[in-house]
Amino acid sequence: MAVYGVYSIAPYAHQAKPWSAIVAAVLLACGSVLLYRSAATPSPGFSFTLPLTMGSSPATRRTGAALLSVAVLLSLWAAGGTTIVLGRDLLHSDRVAIFLSALFLAVFGGGSLAKAATAPVCAEVESMPDGPEKTRALDFMSGSKNIGLLERGLLFAFIAAGQPEAAALVLAAKSLARVPTNDHGKHASEYFLIGTLASVIASLAMGMAARSAVGLPVL
Image 1 (cartoon, rainbow, N blue to C red):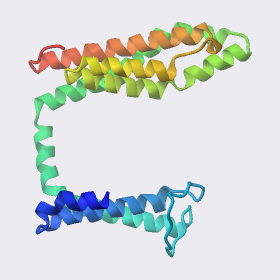
Image 2 (image 1 turned 90 degrees about the vertical axis):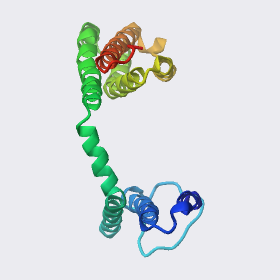
Image 3 (image 1 turned 180 degrees about the vertical axis):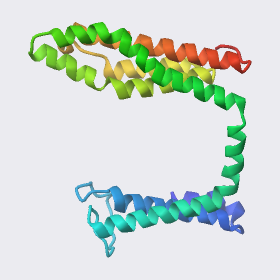
Image 4 (image 1 turned 180 degrees about the horizontal axis):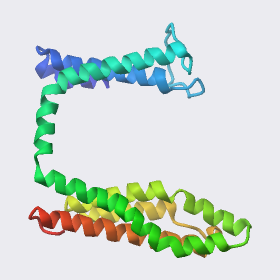
């Protein structure tokens, strides 16, 4: 990766900012390793000696935080001007405001829609007597919130980009990775189908609305 980084900035080798970006990337990687890598993390296959040990010691974490801070400062210096101009353009763009508003409505409003739609199924599960079937159903339903947020975000992004085929792939991937089995019971299957349909409806409606608002074909 370091060799590729040097290759990518070779045409701009006479400028300081591209080299600063490379240094910032290296510091970011080193700081992240020192700050977050635990002593139990598997070895990458090679070793080198440092005056610091991997883990959660205060000195290691302080050094990692310092490296990350330097990386952020170098990044701001290297891309600060361009970032400010780009940010100003984005803030004044009506299209960006429309798509961001539609995205938030699809992701979070769609979550409320899915919660309301699946409420009867959840009530039935809660009223079940304690046992393996109820436990398996609750276990399946417990991880649905974060998955639903990601699902609606991806669906909206692909629909807003005019790629409904890619949105269909998201649903296919979710079905392969999270489809309930017979062990989870019929309530888990109902919860999965109703929640997925609610997410699709919210993402599709907001994606089409946003495209229509900016003058694009709805699909």
